Length: 262
Ligand code: IPD
Image (cartoon, rainbow, N blue to C red):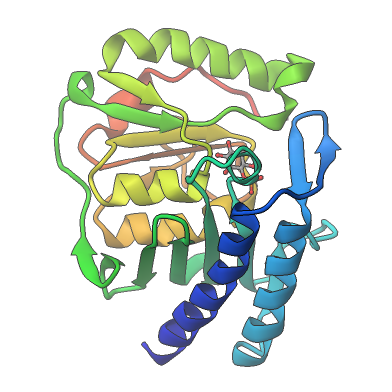
């Protein structure tokens, strides 16, 4: 557990930078019409890379603000310095640092930290999932009708392309079958809320590896399930991630719209 403990200390330090920014007014830039970035995303990422790289010298860091694209390395640490940047900009306290340590397509260690609400989720493969040191697990309610399902909308929504229509059609099919939808604005936290039994399922299109690399292991260690659309094995090249408490997985899949990968 030693390295995970080191990661926690680093995340807690990085969280102070986010907290500081959350209390201030700052410049906001646009990566696209709907995708925001701030000086804090960059500062937190630089801090995390500087501290984490020496600890994991044989891993390549793939981080949101500095990744130049291309094939993903086999041994990688995926970092999202602020998952939920839009919430950060709008002072909505639902955001997190997300870190996932991956080797050969499998997550080994994970950490998702919301410094505003002071919630630190963590997991190590084979050792369970935790929030602030307390063990967490998914709720096993098998009724889709009782389910709260978290989701998110892709940045390309303004283009109204096939991703947009997949979101609309899936919502149209699913909404009457469930208790309600939540769009909380940070995929890493959506996966942690699923892991701790607050919501029963999660799906989203067009997420990036750093959005989910931490949350996936936390969910698996909490007893949940993750797949691609149609129940295929999830990998970072898939457009859609579907996650659940396990008990509603099949029914959730059946109520999402079909999607053809290019
Ligand atoms: C975003 C959040 C959001 C999701 C977006 C992501 P970011 O991450 O996870 O919930 O809907 O697609 O990109 O950009 O704030 O790190």
